[in-house]
Image 1 (tube, rainbow over the protein chains, first blue to last red):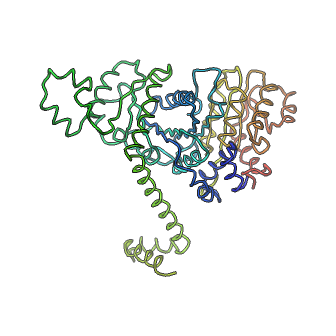
Image 2: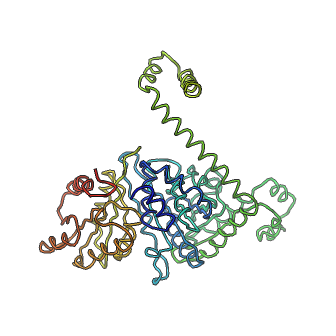
Image 3: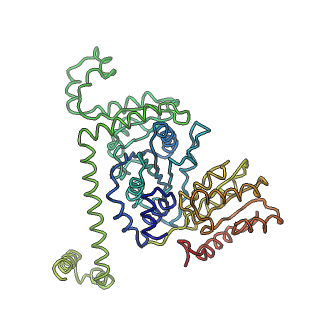
Length: 343
Length: 142
């Protein structure tokens, strides 16, 4: 398949072309840039949903149940699931696909033409995604999927790359993942648009939900209001009655038992509601613009790096720096001025 | 440009729970630098074929200890074609308990190689590296 066949294939909903396009982009094969250029005008139509959380909390299981739910709602669903790739050998064992299991035995997700699942190795990159995950999402978008799920590597506290890709970020936790201080730390809990406490049949779920709720509600305005209340108002606070007026999106907290499908349709409702909210409030546009900016800068930097590699003798330059003949700042200035002003 | 990674879909097809071998193989192929997609137990030929096409697999490895290989393997290959894939551009490998008499028959049906119990894993890795680049018209042809 050549690049033209791949691009036309994507536009005419040819699955093999789609699969091959992803291979091109993932491996940066010659022609991958042409593919991305050709499809750009057809992107931006899908709702991209990121699923992240610690390893083993049930990301893949929740995703497969959500896929089934959104299929019932008539949506085409594309999935990119990232698992860690070894920084040492370059190899990876990608095991998210095997969790794909719906409830309806007559409507199997694996062979459903409205579902496309692609496993991806992070290829040793930190951040929870692979370098090319964003580009793979674009290809799925151009192909015409309504919903695109991006499942991150099992993420700890700092893997927040998913915000650069997703319109809605769902952070999945389970009971006993840590106390209230753990939940107040910076990192993935800051990026949630929706929280899920999965495995809600385990002990300690109420505690985790309570801690999450107090974390989510903690704004200056809320703290002010709370300080004027007494214990007698506790029931009204817990029921949400007092703080209902907020115009901002307050991340809802869902409890699910994913393998039994408990709480999944409510979660899907929340995901749709968040997208609606983002579209109406202008948040979606804002998020996508800042994403475009990051992406553009990355592309520019990449191109400049390639240019430098082509025009300058790196080994020679690095030797001078290591031998203290020149400092890296002066060298950088020299390179930039040569690149910009000498044609 | 990075080198293109070799993607391997490993599958257990049909009613067969013997997955020790395929899991060990998955682990060693990972360490050999391949990207291995393990699909789990009790897959149907359709499911494996779909995975092979969507994941753009270079290698499809089917493990069978149930004796149903003469039925399930050709079906898997047939569905890969049906779903728009090109099995002739992939390495189709079969592992497990395969009687000697069936080996030539499977090869005639489009299987590239059969690895029976006791095969050193390095043999399989070498085989993949050597033979993938010989696949005419494929993305791996060198």
